[in-house]
Length: 309
Image 1 (cartoon, helix red, strand yellow):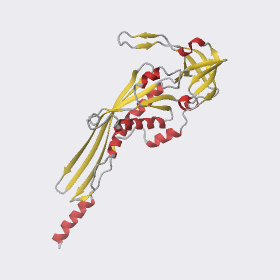
Image 2: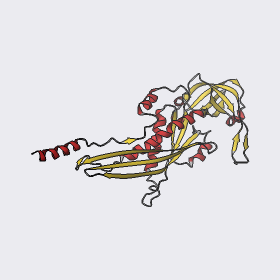
Image 3: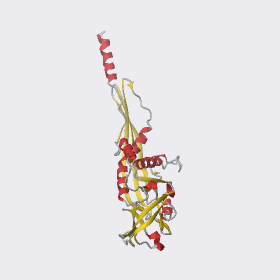
């Protein structure tokens, strides 16, 4: 009887120790509870208007002959994750832009609509999955791993110049163990794809936010009539009656012979406006303001920028 019971107890003991580890992935720099807290917090400054272009899928999967031009699931997913993280910070107004070619349209649209000063574009440059199996005498361990690399670029819409770029990678794993055929089995885990991309974006979002906040908030003079100026931007950006704004005259642009790029020399503050009313909503928001100090040449309204004090 002992010869039968002892091996049976050994099998039961080994089986009881079998477990599957929970899926593991890179911890995001901004945890969900912090994002929720940022969403409830009222941002005291003016919100930057940022356009997000659709990310491209530059992986071998995206270049397959079996995938058409519209099947850009990985790129759309990366774009949506970044957009939701930036929106949750309550510091930005996000505009959807489906084509990078809109950069040219944005350059010349400042006097016709509320455009974005900065656009974020990017790509999923690497994406892959692998499955490993560790087989012992009495056990089997199956490990699934997904990894992704995301590249982003922050572009100044007016100059089309890349002012910031970064690359980050993320991964997610899950495993299941069996002993004597007893334990958990693991089928294809598609959630690992999402977690790997989310982990990569989480590494980037903090630096993207810091770079955007370092850029000055600015608006544009649209028209003037009977002593009242009309500027782009409105309530959703944080403008309200009584708020004072600087009237900024950009410096002269000179061409850098080394790079061929135009460089804007330092400008100067030439006056102050005070907001009297906000009108409209969405991308059609405008505000009216009166000049409280300084001087503005009415024939050169397009030469000025409105900036936060």
